[in-house]
Length: 358
Image (cartoon, rainbow, N blue to C red; front, side, top):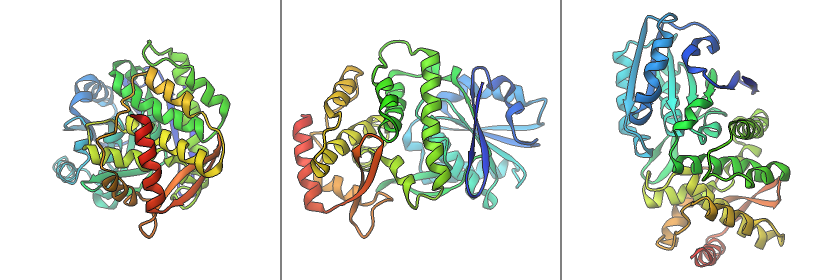
C-alpha cells in the first residue's frame, strides 16, 4: 500500500493506493459515518458496489446505492438532480458520506452532488479507472453543459481517495487508452525521464501491475505538487490542462461518450505540441507521441470537425478570457506556459493540424 497526503490551503487528505482495499474500505476512512450513499454507474455497480456495501455493514447501519447509466452523458443536470433527490430520500444529513465509486465521470458527478447537497457534505473518491488517477485528486467537481464540458462545477476536495488497483483489471481497452493519456500528460509537464518511461508502455499487452502502480503514483505526485501550490486554478494549476483545450472541444463537438476523455486529450496534446513547436521554434517529440498513439490504437481521425464550431467551443474553456483562447503550450518538456491565441492564428494552426493528421 502507498499513501500520499495532499496538503492545500484549505484542507488535507490522503490518497491511498493498493490492492484489495475495497473489502475493508472503512479502515481508510478519516472518521466514522452512520449514513452512507454510494454513487456509481451501471457498469461498475455489479462489479464492486456490493463488495463495498458488505464490507461497510459492520461500520454503518444505513448504506444505500444510487446508480446512473455508464458514460459521459450521465454527467448532466438531469442526473445531478436525480441524485440529489436520492440523497434526500436516503435521509443524508450534514454528517453523512457520499462515496464516488467509478471513473472520472462518477467522481465529478458524485463530488458535485456532495459539494452542493446541504451546502456540502463529505465525500470519498473510490476510482476504478486509470483515468481517475487524475480526476480523483485535486478537488475539481462538475457536470457538463451541452455547450461545454465541466462548465457547471466547484472546487470541493474529497476527504480521502481510496484507489484499489485490482479494479483496473476489468477495464476495456478504450478506458486503458483514456487513462494513459492523462499519465502521458503528467510526463510532458514534469520530467523527460517519466515521459520516456511511459512511452515504452505497450497498452495492447497486459499491463505490468508494478509498472502501472509506479506510473500512477508518479502521475498523482505531479498533480499533487501543482495543486498544493495553486488549489483554485489561479496560476500554475492551469498547466494540468495541457491537451484539454482542444480535447474538451472535440468531446463536446462529437457528442459526449462518442470519444473518451483521454482519447480526445491525446489529440489535444498532439495539437498543443505542434503549436508549441511553431510558436517557440523548438523541437518536441511530436512524431514519437503520434507513433505511440497509433501503435496503441488511439482514434486520431478528426477530419469531419467544423473548425469554426471547435474554436467556439474552445472559447468556452475555463482558461479562456474575453473570448480569447488560452492554451497550455510547452517551451520544452517540463516547462509549460499559458499562451493566448487569436482566432485567425488558431484557425490556421487547426487547419494545418487536421490536414496533417489526415
